[in-house]
Length: 340
Image (spheres, rainbow, N blue to C red):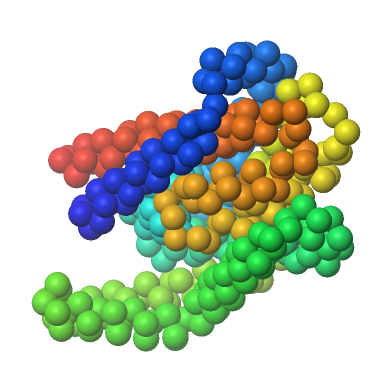
């Protein structure tokens, strides 16, 4: 596990270095910083606020769902889980490291694994479902513009939409099929015992059965409370829109005009859908390529690179630095608890 984390971190840094080289190799950094310095500070502030809200919204949803199923948790702890999750998602391929670490820290804070699993899977499913519905909506009702802006990269968009759809279906299948989940967990446990990573244990099998039972009870509770699911979906939609409108704030902050907020939000959604499921830590490199391809006719007059650096800097690298600090605190706090 530790080796995989180190490998992911090294791959992330390598991809970041290559990306920075490709983006800045023909750029005058002095002019770039000067252009950033001239941006409207009010719009920059709005961009920062929406970026922080984007990650914080997940913490708010975790807090809301935990309280809905009767689990006590402070909003501070839930925000901690969301930022830690963002960090581990950012440095692992296809964002696979976020939820396991969130589950680990939630368990360390005394939350049941079954309840925590349902909450995190509900948030993840809503997160992907909203993105898929947005993607389908863009493809159906905005096809002409989508085809015009995407050009040769249109297949990448549909690949991203397909992969996200497959994941949503898989998450729903896992959530709604308790017996299937128990069989999967028992098969995984059997395999780990067979390759001598675990010792045989009847008690462990009983624990798996008990956990799946609790899991099904929590899923049943959520299924019977439409208001909770409606809030989850609606708030997730707002969360998604917050990171899409961030690019519009950068656009206005650079003193540009002529393109409406809806168009820029749709294009940023297109970039997210295209790269979200690709197996690269933080979607390094491909995000910048897609951004440049999609926004080249929006950010004109040499403003494309500046906008890309500011947008990516705020909605990913700034958040990753904040999240790294939070993740370090979570690790320190869990170590401290283990010693008590």
